[in-house]
Each structure stands twice: as C-alpha cells, then as structure tokens.
Image (tube, rainbow, N blue to C red; front, side, top):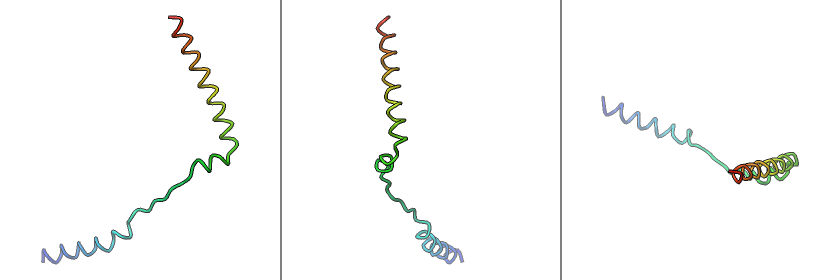
Length: 64
C-alpha cells in the first residue's frame, strides 16, 4: 500500500511539473526607451542635476 501511494505521487508530480514550468523571454529595454522622448529629456535633466551636485560636493570638500 505504501509503495503504491508513493508511485501514484511520483506519477502525479510527473504530470503536473511540465504544466508548471516557467517561461521567460527577453525585452530590449534600450529600444523601448529610445522611442520615448520624455525619458531622454528626464535623463538629460538628471545628468545635469548629478553634475551640479557632484560639483557642489567637490567644492565643499575643497573648502575643508
């Protein structure tokens, strides 16, 4: 009895596991972003903000 339950369990797992297999794909996010002018605008603003903050920190560090 114990063996038959075990084999039934294995048979059930063998039938279910292919249905539960994960699928995956790839997304070309650079292509998607290149088609969004808003992203390019915001990215430029962030670059300018980062450069300004970096300069500000460098100037404060140079004062000390």
